[in-house]
Image (tube, rainbow, N blue to C red):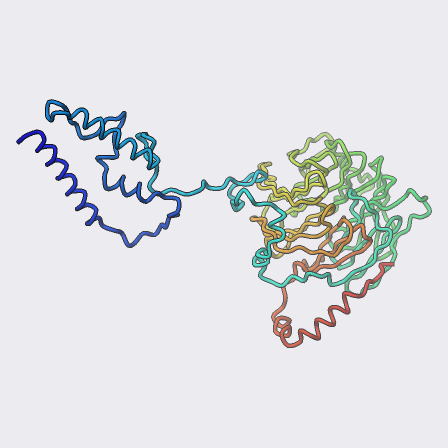
Length: 489
C-alpha cells in the first residue's frame, strides 16, 4: 500500500467516523438549565465537539503527521493544512490559542452589588443602571404591600410656631394615647380618644429666647412628661396634677434629646454631653457620658434597657452600656455617617438590631449589629433622614425625610424595597411618633402641621366586607374628614 493510499484511507475513515457521530449523537430531553443561546457560537461549538482531532493543535502542528518519507510533498501538505486550520480557528474566534472559549456561556457577567451595600446576603443584586430615582417611581413596589395603606392622612392638625430645627425633638406619644407637642415656649397635650387639647406649661415669662427643645413621655403609665429646655434644665411634669415635680440640672446648653429607661431619664444637650438622671432620688445625676464633640440630637434606649444609643451633629453614633459611669467609654462608636445622626430606632423584632439615619450630607439609613459592632446594610434614601419608626407588627421600617423630598417612606426589611411613599407635607418633616396601639404614626413638619397616617394599621375583616358595598359613601365621608384642619391651640 502506497503512502498516498494510506493517507487517503486515513482521511476517509476519519470522515466516516465523524459522520456517524454527527447523525447518531444522543440528544438529552431532560435539560433543566436553559442557557442564553444568543451568547453562544453554535457553529463553533459543533465544530469543537464533532471535529476534536482538527481543533486541538498548538504551535501550528496538526494531529495528522505527514512527512516526505511517508508521502512525497507531505511537509508542504502538512504546512498548508496547519495554515488552513489556523485561519479557520481565527475566523471562529480562537485566534490560534490552545484555550477554547466555553461552549455554554453568559452574555454578560453577573452584575456587581451596589456600592453602598455592606452585607451581600441582605440585599438583592441589581443592574448597574439601577438608581434610587427609578426605583422610587416604580409602581411595582406596591406589589410588596399585602394590605391597604391610605395615601392621605386620616387627620391634620394645625401646629403654629413649630420650630424649624432639625436637631430638636418636639413630639412624643404616651402609652395612654395622649400626644405631647412643643410649640415654641409652650407644651400642648392632645387626647387622641376625645380630641381634647390643653396647655400643660408656658415659659413666656422667661423671655423671647426661651423655648422648649424636647419632650418625652415616661414609658410605664404615661403619667409623667419630661421637658427639655433651651436654658439647660430638664423638667419633670405630673400631667394629672398639672404640676412640675422636678427641675434637674446637668447641662450648660439646650437639651435637644430625651429618652426613658424605666426610672432613668437620659438627656442629650448642645454641650455635647449625655446625662443619666435617676428621677427617684434627690441626687438625680448618676452618670455624665462624654464622647461626642458636637450637639447630641438623638437618644434611644434599647427595648431591653441594656444599651443607650446616642447620635450627634459630629456624624457619630455611640453605644453606651446601662451600667456606664462618668468615666466610661462607649461600647462602640460608629463613624460611617457623613452628616448629623438624629434618627435612631431599635428593632422590636431582632435583638441587637439598630437603625440610624443621617442628615442632608448623608441621606442614608444604616443597620447595625450592636452585639458585634458590624454594619449590616446601608441604603441611600436620596433625602435628609429626620426620623425612623419600626412597625411593631411587621418587619417594616418607616422613615421621615426633610430636604429635598419632605415625605415619609415605608421600607420592607431586610431587602429595603420601598413599599409606600406618603406625601402631603409642604416643608421638611422634622419629627415622628407612633401610637400606643402601633397602628398610626404622626408626623410634624416645618409647614406647621401634624399629619396622622394609618400606615401600620391592619384592616379588619368587617371593614373589608363593607368596603365594596359602601365605597361611594365612605369615600365622601373620608374626603370631608380630611378637608378639616384642626388647630392644636
